[in-house]
Image (tube, rainbow, N blue to C red; front, side, top):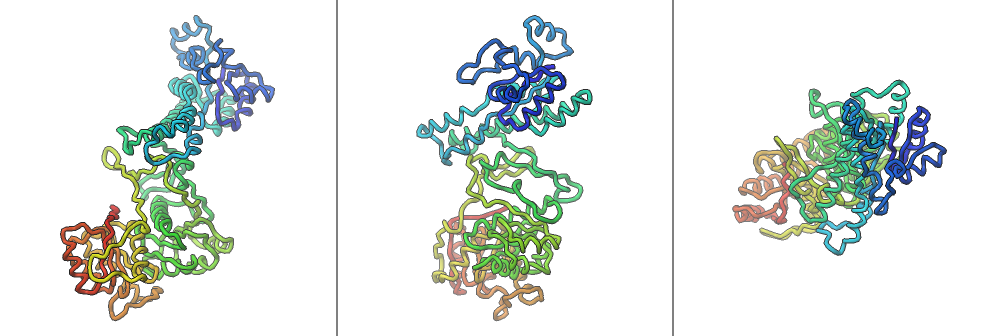
Amino acid sequence: MRALLSVWDKDGIVAFARGLHDLGWDLVSTGQTATAIAAAGIPVRQVADVTGAPEMLGGRVKSLHPAIHGGILARRDHAADREDLHARGITAIDLVACNLYPFVAAISAADLPPAPLGEAMRDDVASAADQIDIGGPAMIRAAAKNFADVVVLVEPTAYGPTLEALREGGIPLPARARLAQAAFAHVARYDATITAYLAAVSGDPFPPAMALPLERVRTLSYGENPHQEAALYRLADPRLTGPGLADLVQHSGDAPSYNNLLDLDCARAIVADFPGPAVAIVKHNNPCGVGTGATIEEAYRRAFAGDPLSAFGGVVAANRIVDGAMARAMGGTLFWVMVAPGYADEALRAFARRQTRVFSVPAADGDARLPALAWHVRPVAGGFLAQTRDSVTADSVTFTTAAGRDPTPAELEDLRIAWRVVKHARSNASVFVRDGAVRAVGAGQGSRLDSVLSASRIAARTAGGDHGGSDPARDGRPLAGTVMATDGFFADPDAVEAAALAGATAIAHPGGGRKDGAAAEMAGRHGVALVTTGIRHFRH
């Protein structure tokens, strides 16, 4: 029996080679892999000794030879294949262990601009291209194609189980098929990353064809409902995409569900938009409370006061390390999930006594390095919709007065908070803010008027109930002294009037509608500062 070992990731390869040698296998290897095996005192043949052809082109060509690929591809139950091997003096190869050059590491080390790279980046492109493996994928694909006769391994974690199976008599066909599937997936992810890189080089944000490099991170207990199955997949490599849900570190609580992760993603995205301490509480993928403050505890208290009733059973995200004060403030209310960059020991001890699933995830350090890996992708019947992400920030938006007076500095500050939050709420969305905290959210309504009225009812219930709301209605108006941001223009001025009657003193909307003039007139009639942003934030 002969094995071909040619790996970039040499973790475990020497122990694997020793195990194969002890079982009587003949070992063939390349380059540094052969050097590592020989240094351990294990007999190994160089590929050049098998092919009779030395490496060339600086190592670019060494395994691309009939003595290698004929040995891998020969079908053992085909007499003609056996005769071909015999006529050419080729020995069959029964196992291939191979993984590929680190293309991701090469391109993540480069300073890639989001625009076409052009001639100025020629050296960086050439450096990345040098890491495109040719011989490795060819060997992996050949072995996977012939999986009925050849065992193919691409992950060091497979070495131990493979040795154990060989000691027990062999590897059954279903196991060989699973290894072949993993091999094709390994090459497919590699090729997909190269494809995304070349799309960046070409400057085409949506090339005619694209594959996304995905690998499963974990299976989930079920999907949105118990009769649905679910799993979490990682996109590419964190060095290219930045940290995400695949990098969650769990500190306590049960394993997360599909819905937990959806809400966690939404909550984390909200607080990531804030430069100062911020806390978001999300329920059913919509914010029900968002607060800012001088401390993370203060931000939490403001977020919770916005809608304490809806906060029950929600997901909480913080953009600062959670201290003991915040953890104590969260006591007495059931939260299913908590996510933050980190936790003080006192906070972790407090959460360990509760049902909350507690996670940390590294802070994002920017968008994905390759544009195709930054897409927002959504499945539809028979395909996928892809778009660039809504990366416009509130700090980059200019509020232009469209009617009446200019907003006061305090109103402007709250309007920016409302504008940060409204892009994370389902359309039609209306977000009301006062004193650095969200006071009510209307989301997912069929009309903008219903969105405003829904928020007004939430504010009235919170102010009048016994759920811990800290800001009672003023003058009978549930949203007195708030400002409002809405994600789309006003199709009719009725929503402006409803917001003003509920107590809003300033309103931000994108503008651009046929009835902008009527909306401005209505705002002026009620003394409301109406501003436009020129940016729409629909979230369907």
